Picture 1 (cartoon, rainbow, N blue to C red):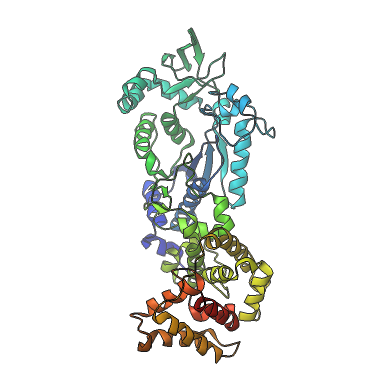
Picture 2 (cartoon, rainbow, N blue to C red; picture 1 turned 30 degrees about the vertical axis):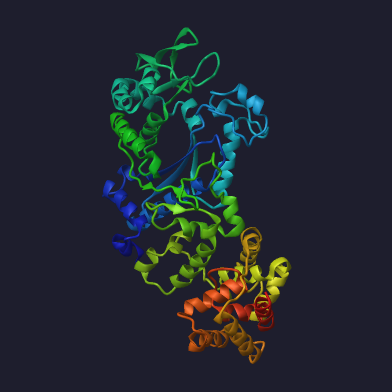
Length: 524
């Protein structure tokens, strides 16, 4: 298929982003250089679901640009801000007293509280790389400390000093009066305490990289080169764009103003603001912004307990400029939608494939999707099984429903069973409430029981569905709509307001077991 031609017309957001880069470099990047994509990481904490979404979305744009250009060279840099000073001691690390002694110092120069790496930053950088490797991302890791200390940023740092006053003119109007008094684009590192200092500085010699500042009452003249200083982060961001030659970086809506200021500073430094997308932030189930301090977010480990990494990627793909709620309740649909879109891909033309999230999730090499049941149906099954639910028992039900159901035949099904058991344990069982049937529901359930009694144990799901459907349509039972009948079945038999096709559920759970559920409901 001609994906390149389709990419030029595609309305998928990844190609809209890719076309920004094609416009930036109509004839390719000068000298045949690779277009550089960047994501940033603050190593004072551990990688999280926000880290995943930013690297994943950036990767999608990168691959879209390669498709659009017929294979133009690209690189992705994962940049760690490990020269940042430690502002507070995290709650979830050991040796907190030791870390307290090093507050304010660069993360790259603080001992590792876990005792496994040469520094706290190195420990968390390793966690980041393990995290990114786990999901198969193609990237180059870049450490701020290594770049600063190795002199790679020295030329750009001298330019910062040359344009010091102009940078101050950009930054000071954005600050409160009190902050203006001490603000400096350059943060020298104290030669005595090793702390990253927030003090005013005076440029002594821009060409030599020399500044003057006060350090605990003593006037110090010191070079800012080779790791003796770092930049305030908005200036640092701009300097990094210029020094590394970054062409694309996306960031959250909360950094919108910062991106504008850093873009202006990048221009002062002789560079160009990268292209990028400003994405909306995740919200909790109440529609509130997710906050580490509130603990109202969903960790990536939690998602992977209840769903696959592919379902997470599917969930975050659409509409990055729209806010998304991120909580356990969105996982079941994300899992089923992922498989549905994956199943559609093979029959789609190039244009539709480029608009299908799974094309990007699998980088155009989408495996066949074949599952005997949906994830929602699995959840309904393990939900009604209650404490009897375990993996072997679920496989037994599946083999009764689909004779060739096995881990070999459906290799992804075993993981979904594990996910379903965990989800049912943590979210379905604690809130499960099957209400008592009322009014016409009682007679309708008795009729359903009688109809099921006439069917063979191996009745087809469609035949069972026909019987269920006929009861709901029968005016004798007075259901205003079929939806009312199905809701009654879900609430009295499954303890849920929504549910699966009842024919499929009964076929999976078994006619005898379903009749027992009906009996329990009628005797409740």
